[in-house]
Length: 345
Image 1 (cartoon, one colour):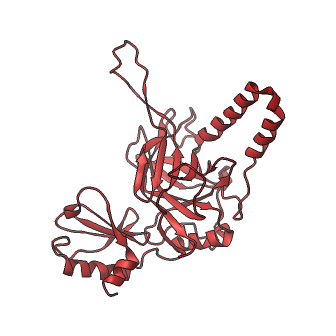
Image 2 (spheres, rainbow, N blue to C red; image 1 turned 45 degrees about the horizontal axis):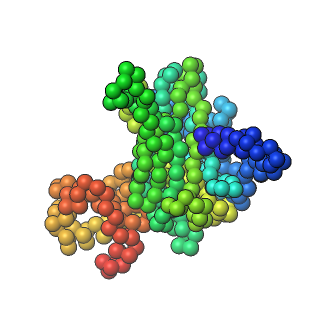
Image 3 (cartoon, one colour; image 1 turned 135 degrees about the horizontal axis):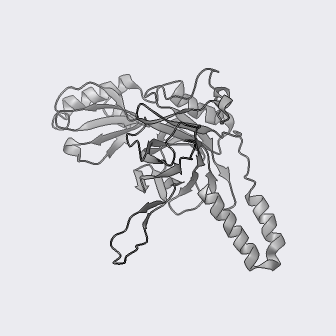
């Protein structure tokens, strides 16, 4: 809720500094605080956070305990079918951007822990990863987000001790308060604070998400977008399992349901075709892929790794490689369907 508090403060400053525009400012602030409803309806929910087996566990919350959970039926799923990615088993939490006068943003999903679920005074943090995924309304499939489109996450500011100022008391250094998700990966701060646990061991907090292009304007194509997080606390640094957050940006309900179904009710990757491509690559490029390997699922990828340290994986209709001859970073080799066609499949 950092963003919304900041914007509300700006409205108050404007009122006090220019009394002649009080009526106009009040009218505009009322409009600002009433987001334009989108066709898919309210997709507000919480992610339950607790400590289990000495690590953070994130899960779908229980509405009977007072939290918000989007019903599977709202997402076009069978009543007992929670939104879990079919290929990887990754849970998917949904949300929906709202349109404001100067940006498209939302502070959902929230993060909630019940009394005694967490350590009092501990800080919950997120670890951002992956690439910004996008459900293309024309291709009607998951791919990588368009170039220059990003989701900005406003995490809690991180204060680090500063011993270099030459004074007895130094002002702590502030880590940048934004994480940027785009098709190339993560920029800005990869880890920031979600919230501080209350004295009773509970947590309830919301972060602000903004979708924009790299020029910081509202122009982002309609579609579904998805980001990847893991959670830790300062007392329990072993990360949680990966979770995905899927945002509806202006889709009609039935289109958003299709985006959900393309992850939950079917595999996002044709694994049989992927194995054919892997086998073909091993036969034709032995210096890059020097041995026959077994496919596996990890971190959202359908992948293989090789004796030279190189790995190749498929996700969101793109092929990624890292390690070995590809170097330490993650390299995008191209679109999966294009490369399979070039290979003659």
